[in-house]
Length: 116
Image 1 (cartoon, rainbow, N blue to C red):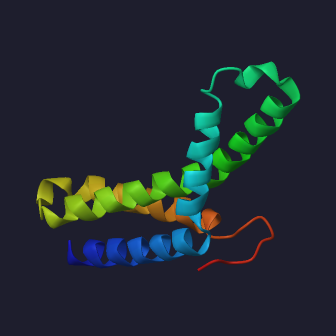
Image 2: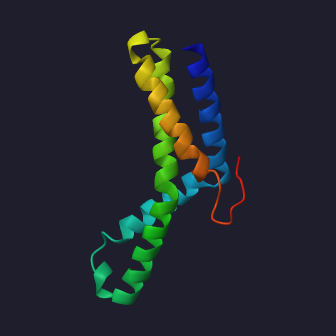
Image 3: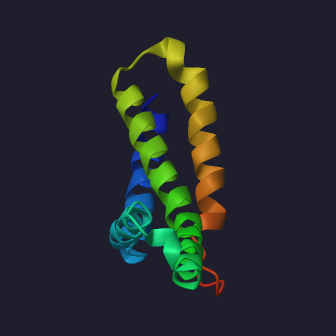
């Protein structure tokens, strides 16, 4: 499990660096603020403005959700590895592989430049 711990720690470091570099926390705050606007009375009264906001929400969700989900998954893997439970080794190996294969395409932005 030592090798898994090492891989998971490295993956967490790379994911956290990418999340910071891409400003995912700031984008998440912006997303939550826009989602809050949709709950305001009269939001839908201005259809064109509402449509623009909903498009921005959709864009932000597609940008931040994969990163937030990956960051959560990697943190959970690291926590479970700390239990040092041999019964979880196969499952954690699969989860680590899945997280790694999820990270690889995410680490490139829309222009194709590598972030990590």
